[in-house]
Length: 277
Image (cartoon, rainbow, N blue to C red; front, side):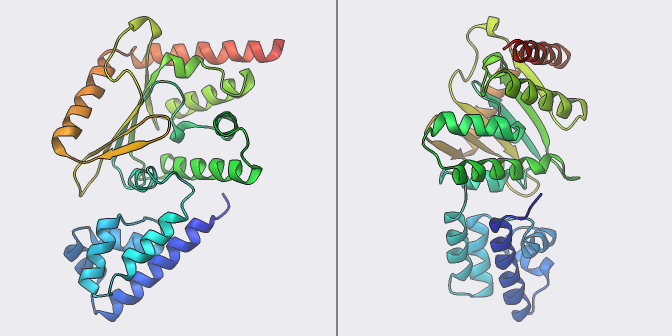
């Protein structure tokens, strides 16, 4: 995959961090302990592989006495992010999560999307978008999805509503390809997908998406999103409530085997439709 401008600028952040850390006479482990992350994470920050959260950038400024340079740099880089402002922090958290649980009621989640599906969804949402903008959205989603190919990939649990499986986003050929991609990930055991069937009727968390994330060295978070906004939640009581809603959703799903069969059947239906139109 081609390098992105975002990769280049975060590598600059990492080089700046290494320069200031060494000037302060601190090892990666020593700096990590002082800002409450592991030394290994500091190393990943310096290589531009991982991106620190804003609170970590602020603590680095305090420890290294930089006058706020890392907070200012972080904010400038985030402003260049291809993601909506309310989603930028979520994309960063996905990259360091050890477990991600997601519910998608209407469309396939970004981490599972193919390029063609993302293109169709972007054009449907922004019918006057430039080709440059569309390609930027495709690149950003494929780069996010790269975490599933990494050796340290998170456990990824997905609950799809049957509506997301059956909706012909981009047409039959695009949907057949999209569902085949999900099936491939399931068979590789990179993701565990179950489906809430339409026949189930009412179920927990009826509207909007839900994403739960767990980490090695920080509390779990929840993220909810509607059509034009999203909310990142870290209050323990609220996150616990979101986790309970997800547990209730899982109770309403088909078994993994039955879910696989449903997705296979839907993919075949779309393939047949694509051949006859």
